[in-house]
Image (cartoon, rainbow, N blue to C red; front, side, top):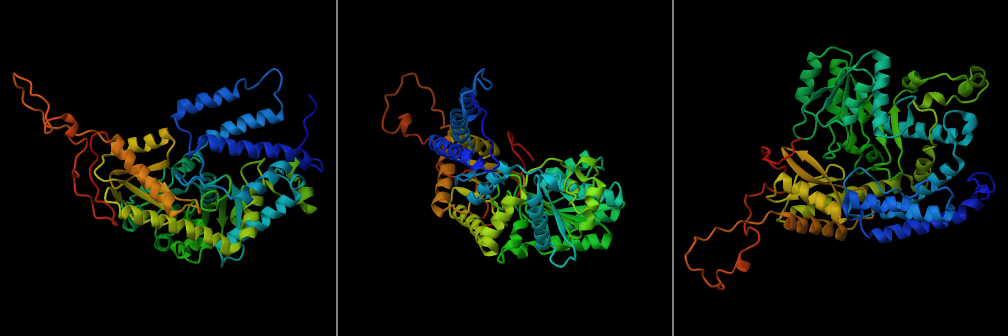
Length: 515
């Protein structure tokens, strides 16, 4: 077998072109075979089929590039949960823009490593300008804002707690019950005290409880607010929380991994009022930014806040090299080798501009409100609340939590839809997280039809009254034939809560899965 060609260099594009044709054909074929938002059959079926393609994974003699690419990429696409399908709406898992994926191809082909300038001369310049520009969006009035690229919101939140610890010692994090799980995990990884969790009974932080906690706790304190919660997409009252932090001498970190890009929409940026008052802010553009993962950001109002990340390794950032003018990249991350994720973000920002990105955001938020309207008008469905960003919680009327969970898994097993699950006010809800700006009203209508049909399919049958025994069996008549008995109740077992408002909390019933 001849030595396989490389992706880079002057000959690289010519070597890539026929391989890309193979990959694109395989992506098409796999999606056509899948025929929906995810493969039908559940984990056992998908795993068995995929392993059949993989075997043998390491053959004695290679099969060749075309055969391996076609087989494995087709298997990957056939077995994918495709966020570009309008019925794939469970998670903050965005369908990436084609132009961002194309830019990511260039990053993969050239393979710059963002740990020293001599491995990434142009990529380091792109990253420096991008991070400064994004930080200025968050902190428009700060004299020297800056940001670092992260692998996502989890790493950005961890960095925020790390930087606070380096400024003040073992800080005590204070967050709402609605905060992302990465906050507690970051405290554990960093050896910090377990975060103090204050109630968020309506989905956002209870300000009175936060005030009490800040009054009683010892400083130093780092309050973590959330702009776009994982379960309901709600935004904490950022300005009011910042006021409390000022009153009590606490620092503020805002996890805006989901909601941060609303800054780019003149229509919706008001939801983030107070964001610029944070000591650090998490953004994640592989959510409401339509980037291939990873595309996380940690922004700070003063680049000096990032100084604790500085690290010295003579083979990467020798002092004399730095003094001679070679940029020191090692202090831009906790990671050493990392991809030039700034490229795809920069391409997207330049290609679409502010108005193009605002249009994508506005379309997506509008789709969520349209879905809420459809739920509101469907008598067999209950709506949790109007969406804040693009998350809509709903459930079939009268269903218990066990049925809700079964409906979701049935849709997954049949390959019909990918919906999430969330607990709110004591009940389990189906969660649609809309991130596809191409989703149409018909797509949303058919999604709700799937849910209602599946709920009917999986509902337990009604038990008709048992007829008294008689010595002589009666011949079937039109009025006694079992086929005439209704398969399901003809009336709802309970009056649903008023639509358009949060349902009143109820106590979990047997079989519920409390949060």
